[in-house]
Image 1: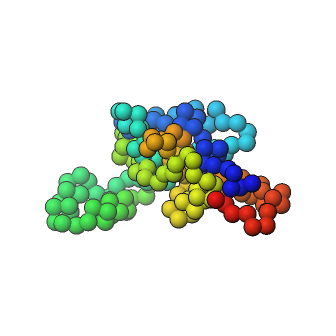
Image 2 (image 1 turned 60 degrees about the vertical axis):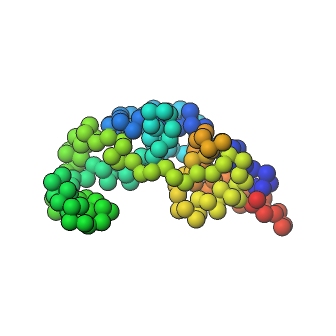
Image 3 (image 1 turned 30 degrees about the vertical axis):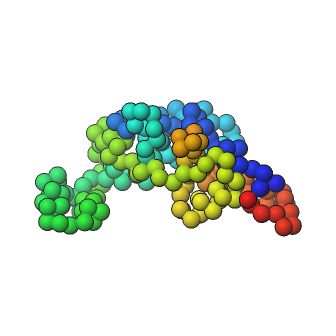
Length: 189
């Protein structure tokens, strides 16, 4: 039954996921991602992110495919340009978006070279979406859909112990649909 499944039954433990220090470079993060992929069993999807860890071992961010590529794009604005725009009172998010829109086409070689200069901290997105390990699969599905997240950090007593990935949850639901596991009146939790 779907309602019997809990987040802890579906999550990947933190030790099985790609993690890296916030101070690591993007090149180092990609090496950690490759290493973590090797440890996956045939029935698991490839990781689509690297978790960024602070000095105390806490998860503070995610380095997604999108975040990596965005961080490697050349910037149209230099540091002094950004400082002047911020000093003029312009919104930081708007300045960031303008800085990333370069009239110069991205050069693959220069983007790859940038991987040694850009840190995980500069590229990561905050890891804010989480769910308790004892939550039901139904609660997890709702949280994934509402947040539009590709994954949720799984917590036990406010400490991250794993990650619940949309791809794994989707496969579980899809497998049950294909098998015809629907039970009249069953709820997801």
